[in-house]
Every structure is written in C-alpha cells, then in structure tokens.
Image 1 (tube, rainbow, N blue to C red):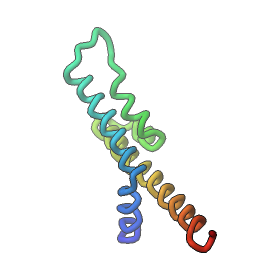
Image 2 (cartoon, one colour):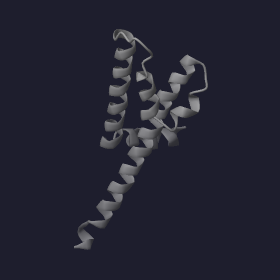
Image 3 (cartoon, rainbow, N blue to C red):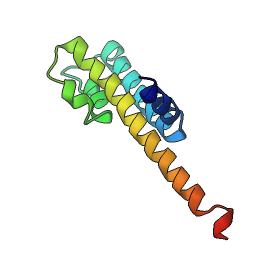
Image 4 (spheres, rainbow, N blue to C red):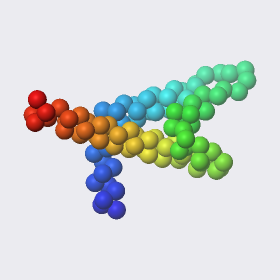
Length: 104
C-alpha cells in the first residue's frame, strides 16, 4: 500500500494533474448548478459531461445505481490525474536527463 501511495501522491501534485482535476471540478460544479438551479423545459444533459470528462474510467461505473455511478466520476478523475501526472513526471525526467550538463 505504501508503494502505491508513494508514487500516487507525487503524480497528483504535478501541474498537469492539478489542472485536470481543476477542469473536472469546474465541470462538476457547472453540472450541479445546472441541475439544482436552472429550470429546463426538457431534460438537461449537464450531468453527462462529468462522466465524459472522466471517461473511460468513469464509464465502467455507469450501469451501477445512481449514487454508486457518481463514485465513478471521482475514481475516474483520480485515476486519470495520476496517469497524466506520472506521464508528466517521466517526460520531465527524460527532458532533464537529455538536456543536462553532460550533453552540452
């Protein structure tokens, strides 16, 4: 468990992961405001955007009952932020090695 946590936390603290989590939070707030405060003559599809922003991981939870389906958005956001953050860290490390003092 500590191995997962020791690699997950630094990956979630990267600018790319934090930016992605900010986008997910903004879309989720927008969807919640739309559902709670905006009158619609028909059906609003604002809630679908939270699942689309965190797809494909969140789509694995769509068939569950409503409260559990929304945990897919949270899990999808964390999983994808960790993947983006780890990719950022690896690319950053690769570029640092490539442009280090020994390559000049």
